[in-house]
Image 1: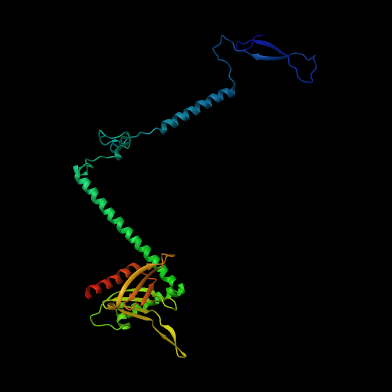
Image 2: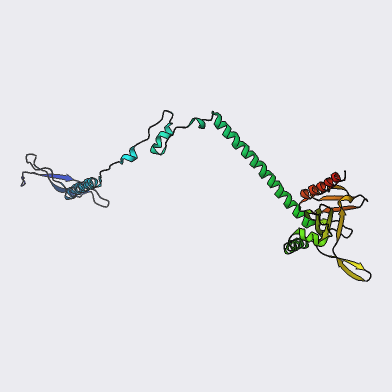
Length: 305
């Protein structure tokens, strides 16, 4: 039969089977409207499809508007895009660095092949060589002083007593005004006699090493203990400083030596003309003391000739 709008009604018969239904169920009629192909109206669209298309168009319009709003004009600074002229020998890596790499012309004296440049390099090498030698000498002196100090403290019967004795002696020297005054107060001197040097050390005795100071003057070698030593006199105990005095004209030999089993233990043997021997050890400045004693002996021998 005819339907309003130019469509016609058709009967569509579908058979459905479901679990539990009986075989004798009748057909089910569904009525579906088909558009008239002669009309200008398009196919009928589902409302949900139309809403989706409208939603897509709205979202697309928003995206385009947002994109248009995000567009901004950009202008490059002329200083940033200006590059330095590239020399012929510039590498590709330097070229990529842009305005941060610059080249300047070098003078003839800066040429590694020039004579002035070579002379400058030789001067630098000589200076470094001298500096290295001085550093080596200073390092060796520091090592010698450290070793001598340790050996000096070990020579005494007590490490702590030796350290305290050195501190007490240093305080005494400062209070008395120096080794020169202590030397003249401790020993008899002649007017023209001058103190050459003094060395902290030990004197070997039958009672053990005695800590003191060895003085070298233009007239004699003299040793005095830092502290008074006790000794028996009759039934009494007396205290006195241990002293040794050898005039230079009685001096026969100065022999440096060291222990075979422990080379760090160094000694100086002093022999007088009447064959008396004195052994000094534990010097804080061993090399300096050997040189000073040998110079004093040599100077006196030259005067005697």
